[in-house]
Length: 121
View (spheres, rainbow, N blue to C red):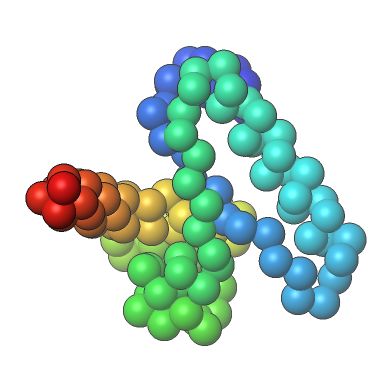
């Protein structure tokens, strides 16, 4: 991960928040993988953004309760990818697309809040 981060120097990294549904062991392993990815960003100072699985599904499919197959299909459609994507690849791309779709709006809202706060002074 660190080699990729050093090569591409991302300004932002988007990760999915860990949640535990049924299998604590899976959640622990996912948490360790997330931690490794986040630690790899320290070398370039990238800002880390976290998204809940429900928010990712909402952004990609339009429904927070969407199935993995629906997410994979929509990622393929959005990226004009003709071949079937592996589930993990589709999930990672879905988080990246969610960030790409939501971050510009979040930045505008943050700027507007600063302007409003400045105007109140």
